[in-house]
Image (cartoon, rainbow, N blue to C red; front, side):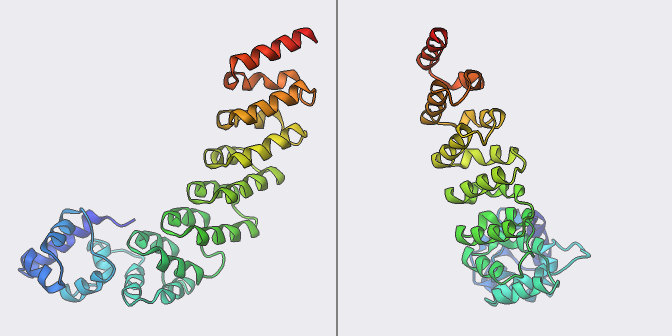
Length: 273
């Protein structure tokens, strides 16, 4: 990730080496002196279009600016910025596809890039270029449709499906249900469903309750989701117990989440049976 404090300190140093005031620098860049002050304090950083101008003015590379003047073995971030400043997102995808830059560098610059531009870049990157860990880092900056498309690629490749739970806050409800169904049907790590649960729709839980009543989902897995079940889902399980489709003991882990009146009725029925 970019360290805006280091970037700001480096800009301040370069400005002083040129014996310029913040106001003079601002005038050359056609921006407010308050903006320069914010950069140097580390409160913000130059936008994509301004970085190449600073690079030219101070006679340093964009990479130097973005790394706060520190020497780095791996470079390529500056090339991405320069292409973005020239409004060439397709060229950025080409840089990554050819290995001249890498996805982690795109992640680093993502907060400065418009969602539409970032969408264009990832749409033109070769399939499987983005690993799930990088996709999760990019998720806050991508439109949901683009994110769904990238997640689909992961599922098609049958790789890291469980890791997609990290995308849950940014995925649509339909996609959450799709992932839950895949985890269940492929018998993957159940903890993945627990991670997806806070973002799941009532329809997803309804589907899981049905699987449970039909005998396709065991008590341990279902009970792990008890805190997320709505009243109607719990009552559906209760009715399944009352009808004999589920054993009485099945409700034990759900007891803390059931109304006392409901529990009382179940106990009475059990005693009368």
